[in-house]
Image 1 (cartoon, helix red, strand yellow):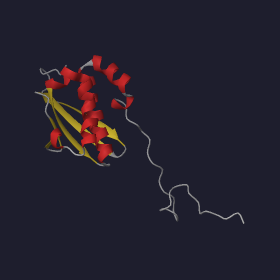
Image 2 (image 1 turned 120 degrees about the horizontal axis):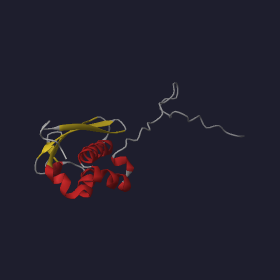
Image 3 (image 1 turned 90 degrees about the vertical axis):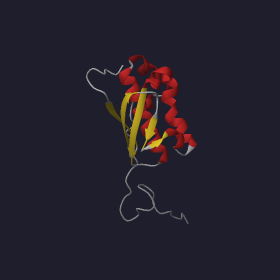
Image 4 (image 1 turned 60 degrees about the vertical axis):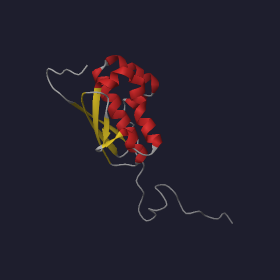
Length: 138
């Protein structure tokens, strides 16, 4: 659990593609604020459900903390996945029993996916990194 004798808040980050989420957690009632907006107002709805996954797995352990999330970069889904990972990491850090639950459910809850898209090559940069001009055989 969060050791209140040493510090009142704890910080951790989560990443997905270009999105980076920074979470600060303090003892509370289970409120989640993302970029100064409550989770209930976070759109689209599928992203909200994605963010709720680690909270539903943790059940009562998540209701003891208030989460303040700052997320930047990437797209809508990347940001939601980064927030999801950051929340799961902070919960697993404070409760060792949850770590195994999270890893059994989905490894990406705790471990970042380092894959990135390949950069486009010069002269045909709009076509993609490896695509060539189509040629006729006859």
